[in-house]
Image (cartoon, rainbow, N blue to C red; front, top):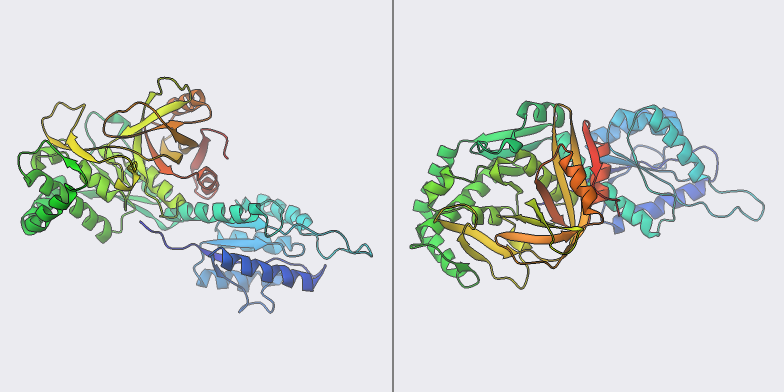
Length: 465
Protein backbone atom coordinates (compact mmCIF):
# COMPACT_ATOMS: atom_id res chain seq x y z
CA UNK A 1 0.00 0.00 0.00
CA UNK A 2 1.29 3.43 -0.91
CA UNK A 3 0.13 6.61 0.74
CA UNK A 4 -0.30 10.03 -0.90
CA UNK A 5 2.52 12.49 -0.20
CA UNK A 6 2.16 14.81 2.76
CA UNK A 7 1.40 18.37 1.62
CA UNK A 8 3.38 20.72 3.82
CA UNK A 9 2.39 24.36 4.16
CA UNK A 10 5.65 26.34 4.05
CA UNK A 11 5.10 29.30 6.36
CA UNK A 12 8.38 31.16 7.02
CA UNK A 13 8.28 33.48 10.01
CA UNK A 14 10.15 36.77 10.24
CA UNK A 15 9.77 40.09 12.03
CA UNK A 16 10.14 43.77 11.24
CA UNK A 17 13.40 43.82 13.20
CA UNK A 18 16.69 42.10 12.27
CA UNK A 19 17.96 41.59 8.73
CA UNK A 20 15.37 41.25 5.98
CA UNK A 21 18.07 40.15 3.56
CA UNK A 22 19.26 37.36 5.83
CA UNK A 23 15.68 36.17 6.41
CA UNK A 24 15.21 35.90 2.63
CA UNK A 25 18.51 34.04 2.37
CA UNK A 26 17.36 31.51 4.98
CA UNK A 27 14.02 31.10 3.19
CA UNK A 28 15.72 30.31 -0.14
CA UNK A 29 18.10 27.84 1.51
CA UNK A 30 15.15 26.09 3.14
CA UNK A 31 13.20 25.87 -0.11
CA UNK A 32 16.17 24.25 -1.82
CA UNK A 33 16.65 21.81 1.07
CA UNK A 34 13.00 20.76 1.08
CA UNK A 35 13.14 20.15 -2.67
CA UNK A 36 16.24 18.03 -2.13
CA UNK A 37 14.35 16.03 0.51
CA UNK A 38 11.42 15.53 -1.92
CA UNK A 39 8.96 17.27 0.38
CA UNK A 40 5.84 18.60 -1.34
CA UNK A 41 5.35 22.19 -0.16
CA UNK A 42 2.78 24.95 -0.62
CA UNK A 43 4.43 28.38 -0.32
CA UNK A 44 3.09 31.84 0.50
CA UNK A 45 4.77 33.52 -2.46
CA UNK A 46 1.43 34.19 -4.19
CA UNK A 47 -0.08 35.62 -1.02
CA UNK A 48 2.61 37.71 0.66
CA UNK A 49 5.07 40.04 -1.04
CA UNK A 50 8.17 38.12 0.03
CA UNK A 51 6.48 34.89 1.17
CA UNK A 52 7.37 35.51 4.83
CA UNK A 53 4.92 36.21 7.67
CA UNK A 54 5.97 39.41 9.46
CA UNK A 55 2.81 40.73 11.14
CA UNK A 56 -0.48 39.60 12.66
CA UNK A 57 -2.38 41.41 9.89
CA UNK A 58 -1.20 38.67 7.53
CA UNK A 59 -2.90 35.87 9.47
CA UNK A 60 -6.22 35.85 7.57
CA UNK A 61 -4.82 35.62 4.00
CA UNK A 62 -2.27 32.99 5.08
CA UNK A 63 -4.92 30.80 6.72
CA UNK A 64 -7.29 31.16 3.77
CA UNK A 65 -4.54 30.23 1.31
CA UNK A 66 -3.49 27.14 3.21
CA UNK A 67 -7.09 26.02 3.67
CA UNK A 68 -7.73 26.34 -0.08
CA UNK A 69 -4.56 24.35 -0.74
CA UNK A 70 -5.70 21.44 1.45
CA UNK A 71 -2.39 21.09 3.27
CA UNK A 72 -1.79 18.32 5.82
CA UNK A 73 0.60 20.20 8.13
CA UNK A 74 2.41 23.52 8.46
CA UNK A 75 6.14 24.20 8.78
CA UNK A 76 6.92 27.50 10.53
CA UNK A 77 10.68 28.09 10.29
CA UNK A 78 11.84 31.24 12.12
CA UNK A 79 14.03 32.93 9.55
CA UNK A 80 15.29 35.86 11.62
CA UNK A 81 13.19 36.13 14.78
CA UNK A 82 9.49 35.39 15.29
CA UNK A 83 6.13 37.13 15.12
CA UNK A 84 4.69 35.00 17.90
CA UNK A 85 1.10 36.27 17.73
CA UNK A 86 0.88 35.38 14.05
CA UNK A 87 2.45 31.97 14.71
CA UNK A 88 -0.13 31.18 17.36
CA UNK A 89 -3.12 32.48 15.40
CA UNK A 90 -2.20 30.70 12.15
CA UNK A 91 -1.52 27.41 13.92
CA UNK A 92 -4.70 27.61 16.01
CA UNK A 93 -6.97 28.47 13.08
CA UNK A 94 -5.53 25.75 10.83
CA UNK A 95 -5.75 23.04 13.50
CA UNK A 96 -3.05 20.99 11.78
CA UNK A 97 0.26 19.48 12.93
CA UNK A 98 2.87 22.21 13.36
CA UNK A 99 6.63 21.98 12.88
CA UNK A 100 8.91 24.56 14.52
CA UNK A 101 12.56 25.13 13.71
CA UNK A 102 15.03 27.92 13.29
CA UNK A 103 18.56 28.05 11.86
CA UNK A 104 21.40 28.17 14.35
CA UNK A 105 22.46 31.80 14.67
CA UNK A 106 25.96 32.80 13.61
CA UNK A 107 28.35 34.84 15.71
CA UNK A 108 27.65 38.58 15.96
CA UNK A 109 29.15 40.78 13.26
CA UNK A 110 32.49 42.56 13.93
CA UNK A 111 30.58 45.64 15.11
CA UNK A 112 28.55 43.54 17.58
CA UNK A 113 25.27 43.56 15.63
CA UNK A 114 23.35 40.33 14.92
CA UNK A 115 21.54 39.40 11.69
CA UNK A 116 18.94 37.32 13.54
CA UNK A 117 17.86 35.88 16.86
CA UNK A 118 16.02 32.79 15.58
CA UNK A 119 16.38 30.78 18.79
CA UNK A 120 15.00 33.62 20.87
CA UNK A 121 11.98 33.87 18.57
CA UNK A 122 11.35 30.14 18.91
CA UNK A 123 11.16 30.45 22.68
CA UNK A 124 8.50 33.15 22.30
CA UNK A 125 6.45 31.30 19.70
CA UNK A 126 6.51 28.01 21.60
CA UNK A 127 5.14 29.80 24.66
CA UNK A 128 2.20 31.12 22.63
CA UNK A 129 1.48 27.69 21.13
CA UNK A 130 1.41 26.21 24.63
CA UNK A 131 -0.94 28.96 25.80
CA UNK A 132 -3.29 28.27 22.88
CA UNK A 133 -3.13 24.50 23.47
CA UNK A 134 -1.64 23.86 20.03
CA UNK A 135 0.49 20.69 19.79
CA UNK A 136 3.69 21.02 17.81
CA UNK A 137 6.86 19.20 16.86
CA UNK A 138 10.23 20.84 17.40
CA UNK A 139 13.51 20.28 15.60
CA UNK A 140 16.45 21.36 17.70
CA UNK A 141 18.09 24.65 16.74
CA UNK A 142 20.71 23.51 14.23
CA UNK A 143 22.22 24.34 10.88
CA UNK A 144 20.25 23.43 7.80
CA UNK A 145 22.81 20.81 6.70
CA UNK A 146 23.09 19.18 10.13
CA UNK A 147 21.72 15.60 10.22
CA UNK A 148 19.26 16.65 12.94
CA UNK A 149 17.37 18.81 10.46
CA UNK A 150 16.80 16.12 7.83
CA UNK A 151 15.98 13.57 10.54
CA UNK A 152 13.51 15.98 12.14
CA UNK A 153 11.75 16.65 8.85
CA UNK A 154 11.56 12.92 8.13
CA UNK A 155 10.12 12.13 11.56
CA UNK A 156 7.52 14.88 11.23
CA UNK A 157 6.38 13.81 7.77
CA UNK A 158 5.93 10.24 8.98
CA UNK A 159 4.02 11.44 12.06
CA UNK A 160 1.74 13.56 9.89
CA UNK A 161 1.13 10.60 7.57
CA UNK A 162 -0.09 8.62 10.58
CA UNK A 163 -2.25 11.34 12.13
CA UNK A 164 -3.77 12.29 8.77
CA UNK A 165 -5.26 8.80 8.52
CA UNK A 166 -7.34 9.52 11.63
CA UNK A 167 -8.29 13.08 10.66
CA UNK A 168 -9.41 12.01 7.18
CA UNK A 169 -10.84 8.66 8.28
CA UNK A 170 -9.73 5.02 8.36
CA UNK A 171 -11.83 2.17 6.98
CA UNK A 172 -11.16 -1.33 8.26
CA UNK A 173 -12.98 -4.20 6.58
CA UNK A 174 -14.15 -6.96 8.92
CA UNK A 175 -14.72 -10.26 7.13
CA UNK A 176 -16.92 -12.50 9.28
CA UNK A 177 -17.35 -11.89 12.98
CA UNK A 178 -15.41 -12.07 16.22
CA UNK A 179 -14.31 -15.57 17.16
CA UNK A 180 -16.29 -16.55 20.26
CA UNK A 181 -13.39 -17.53 22.52
CA UNK A 182 -11.26 -14.47 21.64
CA UNK A 183 -12.60 -12.10 24.27
CA UNK A 184 -9.39 -10.08 23.97
CA UNK A 185 -10.57 -8.82 20.56
CA UNK A 186 -13.89 -7.41 21.80
CA UNK A 187 -13.98 -3.75 20.75
CA UNK A 188 -16.36 -0.79 20.69
CA UNK A 189 -17.03 0.13 17.06
CA UNK A 190 -19.09 3.19 17.95
CA UNK A 191 -16.30 4.55 20.12
CA UNK A 192 -13.74 3.99 17.38
CA UNK A 193 -15.90 5.92 14.94
CA UNK A 194 -16.72 8.74 17.36
CA UNK A 195 -13.28 9.19 18.90
CA UNK A 196 -10.90 8.27 16.08
CA UNK A 197 -12.86 8.45 12.83
CA UNK A 198 -12.28 4.71 12.31
CA UNK A 199 -15.09 3.02 10.39
CA UNK A 200 -15.45 -0.76 10.54
CA UNK A 201 -17.01 -2.11 7.35
CA UNK A 202 -18.75 -5.47 7.97
CA UNK A 203 -18.33 -8.08 5.26
CA UNK A 204 -20.75 -11.00 5.57
CA UNK A 205 -18.84 -14.29 5.66
CA UNK A 206 -21.52 -16.20 3.71
CA UNK A 207 -21.42 -13.64 0.90
CA UNK A 208 -17.62 -13.55 1.00
CA UNK A 209 -17.35 -17.32 0.65
CA UNK A 210 -19.89 -17.33 -2.19
CA UNK A 211 -17.95 -14.62 -4.05
CA UNK A 212 -14.65 -16.47 -3.56
CA UNK A 213 -16.17 -19.72 -4.86
CA UNK A 214 -17.50 -17.86 -7.89
CA UNK A 215 -13.94 -16.69 -8.55
CA UNK A 216 -12.76 -20.28 -8.31
CA UNK A 217 -15.18 -21.32 -11.01
CA UNK A 218 -14.36 -18.39 -13.26
CA UNK A 219 -10.57 -18.45 -12.92
CA UNK A 220 -9.80 -22.12 -12.29
CA UNK A 221 -7.48 -22.48 -15.28
CA UNK A 222 -5.47 -19.36 -14.40
CA UNK A 223 -5.22 -20.42 -10.74
CA UNK A 224 -4.05 -23.90 -11.74
CA UNK A 225 -1.33 -22.33 -13.87
CA UNK A 226 -0.33 -20.03 -10.99
CA UNK A 227 -0.05 -23.06 -8.70
CA UNK A 228 2.34 -24.69 -11.16
CA UNK A 229 4.56 -21.59 -10.95
CA UNK A 230 4.34 -21.47 -7.15
CA UNK A 231 5.56 -25.06 -6.87
CA UNK A 232 8.80 -24.06 -8.57
CA UNK A 233 9.81 -21.93 -5.56
CA UNK A 234 7.61 -23.25 -2.72
CA UNK A 235 6.82 -26.55 -1.06
CA UNK A 236 3.06 -27.16 -1.16
CA UNK A 237 2.03 -30.27 0.72
CA UNK A 238 -0.94 -31.89 2.44
CA UNK A 239 -3.40 -31.64 -0.46
CA UNK A 240 -4.82 -34.52 -2.49
CA UNK A 241 -5.94 -32.19 -5.30
CA UNK A 242 -5.33 -28.61 -6.45
CA UNK A 243 -8.85 -27.54 -5.52
CA UNK A 244 -8.20 -26.32 -1.95
CA UNK A 245 -5.24 -24.13 -2.97
CA UNK A 246 -7.23 -22.79 -5.92
CA UNK A 247 -9.84 -21.74 -3.37
CA UNK A 248 -7.14 -20.03 -1.29
CA UNK A 249 -6.01 -18.01 -4.32
CA UNK A 250 -9.61 -17.00 -4.91
CA UNK A 251 -9.88 -15.85 -1.28
CA UNK A 252 -6.77 -13.75 -1.83
CA UNK A 253 -8.24 -12.06 -4.88
CA UNK A 254 -11.61 -11.47 -3.23
CA UNK A 255 -9.89 -9.76 -0.30
CA UNK A 256 -7.90 -7.57 -2.70
CA UNK A 257 -11.06 -6.72 -4.63
CA UNK A 258 -12.93 -5.64 -1.51
CA UNK A 259 -9.98 -3.63 -0.17
CA UNK A 260 -9.58 -1.70 -3.39
CA UNK A 261 -13.27 -1.16 -4.05
CA UNK A 262 -14.05 -0.02 -0.51
CA UNK A 263 -10.84 2.02 -0.11
CA UNK A 264 -9.84 0.10 3.00
CA UNK A 265 -6.81 0.89 5.12
CA UNK A 266 -6.71 -2.68 6.43
CA UNK A 267 -8.68 -5.88 6.95
CA UNK A 268 -9.66 -7.93 9.98
CA UNK A 269 -10.74 -11.49 9.20
CA UNK A 270 -12.33 -14.39 11.05
CA UNK A 271 -9.78 -16.94 9.90
CA UNK A 272 -11.47 -20.06 11.23
CA UNK A 273 -13.40 -22.26 11.12
CA UNK A 274 -16.20 -21.42 8.65
CA UNK A 275 -13.80 -20.17 5.99
CA UNK A 276 -11.45 -23.12 6.49
CA UNK A 277 -14.23 -25.71 6.31
CA UNK A 278 -15.83 -24.20 3.21
CA UNK A 279 -12.56 -23.79 1.32
CA UNK A 280 -11.07 -27.10 2.39
CA UNK A 281 -7.88 -25.35 3.49
CA UNK A 282 -6.47 -22.83 5.90
CA UNK A 283 -6.41 -19.56 3.96
CA UNK A 284 -3.42 -17.96 5.65
CA UNK A 285 -1.44 -17.97 2.42
CA UNK A 286 -4.08 -15.53 1.19
CA UNK A 287 -3.32 -13.36 4.23
CA UNK A 288 0.38 -13.48 3.39
CA UNK A 289 -0.21 -12.41 -0.20
CA UNK A 290 -2.67 -9.64 0.68
CA UNK A 291 -0.70 -8.21 3.60
CA UNK A 292 2.12 -7.07 1.35
CA UNK A 293 -0.40 -4.41 0.28
CA UNK A 294 -3.05 -4.19 3.02
CA UNK A 295 -2.46 -4.83 6.73
CA UNK A 296 -4.32 -7.90 7.99
CA UNK A 297 -5.72 -8.34 11.50
CA UNK A 298 -6.10 -12.09 11.85
CA UNK A 299 -8.61 -13.62 14.30
CA UNK A 300 -10.95 -10.62 13.83
CA UNK A 301 -8.51 -8.34 15.65
CA UNK A 302 -9.70 -4.91 14.51
CA UNK A 303 -7.39 -3.05 16.90
CA UNK A 304 -4.61 -5.21 15.50
CA UNK A 305 -5.46 -4.17 11.95
CA UNK A 306 -5.35 -0.53 13.06
CA UNK A 307 -1.98 -1.16 14.72
CA UNK A 308 -0.54 -2.60 11.51
CA UNK A 309 -2.03 0.22 9.43
CA UNK A 310 -0.40 2.80 11.71
CA UNK A 311 2.96 1.10 11.26
CA UNK A 312 2.58 0.96 7.50
CA UNK A 313 1.86 4.70 7.48
CA UNK A 314 4.93 5.31 9.63
CA UNK A 315 6.92 3.63 6.85
CA UNK A 316 5.14 5.89 4.29
CA UNK A 317 3.66 2.79 2.69
CA UNK A 318 7.05 1.48 1.56
CA UNK A 319 7.11 -1.59 3.85
CA UNK A 320 4.36 -4.01 4.95
CA UNK A 321 3.40 -4.70 8.54
CA UNK A 322 2.65 -8.02 10.23
CA UNK A 323 0.35 -8.69 13.19
CA UNK A 324 2.51 -10.99 15.30
CA UNK A 325 2.00 -12.77 18.60
CA UNK A 326 4.35 -11.94 21.47
CA UNK A 327 4.79 -15.56 22.48
CA UNK A 328 7.74 -17.06 24.38
CA UNK A 329 10.99 -15.68 25.72
CA UNK A 330 14.27 -16.62 24.12
CA UNK A 331 15.77 -19.70 25.84
CA UNK A 332 19.13 -18.01 26.49
CA UNK A 333 18.65 -14.25 25.98
CA UNK A 334 16.66 -12.67 28.79
CA UNK A 335 15.90 -9.60 26.68
CA UNK A 336 14.57 -11.41 23.63
CA UNK A 337 11.12 -12.69 22.68
CA UNK A 338 9.56 -14.68 19.86
CA UNK A 339 7.40 -12.76 17.37
CA UNK A 340 5.25 -15.47 15.81
CA UNK A 341 2.01 -15.99 13.96
CA UNK A 342 0.77 -16.94 10.49
CA UNK A 343 0.05 -14.95 7.36
CA UNK A 344 3.18 -12.79 7.36
CA UNK A 345 3.78 -10.75 4.20
CA UNK A 346 5.65 -12.84 1.66
CA UNK A 347 8.25 -10.08 1.29
CA UNK A 348 9.26 -10.65 4.93
CA UNK A 349 10.56 -14.12 4.16
CA UNK A 350 14.21 -14.69 5.07
CA UNK A 351 16.31 -14.93 1.88
CA UNK A 352 17.63 -18.36 2.92
CA UNK A 353 14.13 -19.78 3.46
CA UNK A 354 11.93 -21.73 1.09
CA UNK A 355 8.25 -21.09 1.81
CA UNK A 356 6.32 -24.20 2.78
CA UNK A 357 2.53 -24.43 2.74
CA UNK A 358 1.44 -27.24 5.00
CA UNK A 359 -0.64 -28.25 8.00
CA UNK A 360 -1.33 -26.16 11.09
CA UNK A 361 1.02 -27.35 13.80
CA UNK A 362 -1.28 -26.47 16.73
CA UNK A 363 -4.91 -26.84 15.67
CA UNK A 364 -6.08 -30.46 15.43
CA UNK A 365 -7.15 -30.36 11.81
CA UNK A 366 -5.95 -32.55 8.94
CA UNK A 367 -6.28 -29.62 6.53
CA UNK A 368 -3.32 -27.86 4.96
CA UNK A 369 -2.76 -24.28 3.86
CA UNK A 370 -0.55 -22.76 6.56
CA UNK A 371 2.54 -20.85 5.35
CA UNK A 372 5.75 -21.72 7.20
CA UNK A 373 8.82 -19.49 6.85
CA UNK A 374 11.31 -17.66 9.04
CA UNK A 375 11.28 -13.89 8.75
CA UNK A 376 14.26 -11.86 7.62
CA UNK A 377 16.71 -10.03 9.89
CA UNK A 378 16.62 -6.31 10.53
CA UNK A 379 15.60 -3.49 12.88
CA UNK A 380 12.03 -3.84 14.13
CA UNK A 381 9.36 -1.46 15.40
CA UNK A 382 6.46 -2.77 17.48
CA UNK A 383 3.12 -0.98 17.95
CA UNK A 384 -0.20 -1.89 19.54
CA UNK A 385 -3.30 0.35 19.39
CA UNK A 386 -5.70 -0.66 22.12
CA UNK A 387 -8.04 0.61 24.80
CA UNK A 388 -11.50 0.73 26.29
CA UNK A 389 -13.74 3.17 28.16
CA UNK A 390 -10.80 4.05 30.43
CA UNK A 391 -8.82 5.38 27.49
CA UNK A 392 -6.87 4.41 24.38
CA UNK A 393 -3.13 4.04 24.10
CA UNK A 394 -0.49 3.28 21.51
CA UNK A 395 2.32 1.08 22.82
CA UNK A 396 5.51 1.70 20.87
CA UNK A 397 8.94 0.07 21.06
CA UNK A 398 11.98 -0.83 19.00
CA UNK A 399 14.18 -3.89 18.82
CA UNK A 400 16.30 -5.92 16.42
CA UNK A 401 16.15 -9.46 15.14
CA UNK A 402 18.53 -12.08 16.50
CA UNK A 403 19.15 -15.76 15.88
CA UNK A 404 17.12 -18.27 17.83
CA UNK A 405 15.66 -21.78 17.73
CA UNK A 406 13.60 -22.85 14.76
CA UNK A 407 9.82 -23.07 15.09
CA UNK A 408 6.80 -23.30 12.75
CA UNK A 409 4.63 -20.81 10.86
CA UNK A 410 6.08 -17.28 10.57
CA UNK A 411 8.52 -16.07 13.18
CA UNK A 412 11.51 -13.97 14.14
CA UNK A 413 13.29 -13.60 17.48
CA UNK A 414 13.54 -9.98 18.63
CA UNK A 415 15.93 -8.54 21.21
CA UNK A 416 15.01 -5.34 23.08
CA UNK A 417 16.67 -3.15 25.69
CA UNK A 418 14.75 -4.45 28.73
CA UNK A 419 12.22 -7.20 28.11
CA UNK A 420 11.14 -7.30 31.75
CA UNK A 421 9.94 -3.69 31.39
CA UNK A 422 8.19 -4.45 28.09
CA UNK A 423 6.44 -7.45 29.60
CA UNK A 424 5.15 -5.56 32.63
CA UNK A 425 3.99 -2.54 30.63
CA UNK A 426 2.12 -4.69 28.10
CA UNK A 427 0.58 -6.95 30.76
CA UNK A 428 -0.63 -3.97 32.80
CA UNK A 429 -2.34 -2.85 29.64
CA UNK A 430 -4.70 -2.23 28.11
CA UNK A 431 -2.94 -4.42 25.54
CA UNK A 432 -2.89 -8.08 24.47
CA UNK A 433 -0.58 -10.64 22.87
CA UNK A 434 -1.07 -9.35 19.31
CA UNK A 435 1.24 -6.52 18.21
CA UNK A 436 2.02 -5.01 14.86
CA UNK A 437 5.62 -5.30 13.69
CA UNK A 438 7.44 -3.68 10.80
CA UNK A 439 11.06 -3.56 9.68
CA UNK A 440 12.75 -0.23 10.39
CA UNK A 441 12.84 2.07 13.41
CA UNK A 442 9.89 4.47 13.47
CA UNK A 443 9.19 4.91 17.18
CA UNK A 444 9.87 8.65 17.20
CA UNK A 445 7.41 9.22 14.36
CA UNK A 446 4.78 7.16 16.17
CA UNK A 447 5.37 9.12 19.36
CA UNK A 448 5.03 12.45 17.54
CA UNK A 449 1.85 11.27 15.83
CA UNK A 450 0.18 10.72 19.21
CA UNK A 451 0.43 14.50 19.81
CA UNK A 452 -1.95 15.05 16.91
CA UNK A 453 -4.50 12.28 17.55
CA UNK A 454 -7.01 13.37 20.18
CA UNK A 455 -7.68 10.76 22.80
CA UNK A 456 -4.68 8.57 22.00
CA UNK A 457 -1.93 8.45 24.61
CA UNK A 458 1.58 7.10 24.13
CA UNK A 459 3.04 4.16 26.03
CA UNK A 460 6.80 3.87 25.58
CA UNK A 461 8.11 0.34 25.77
CA UNK A 462 11.72 1.53 25.70
CA UNK A 463 13.76 4.67 25.35
CA UNK A 464 13.25 6.11 21.86
CA UNK A 465 16.39 6.01 19.73
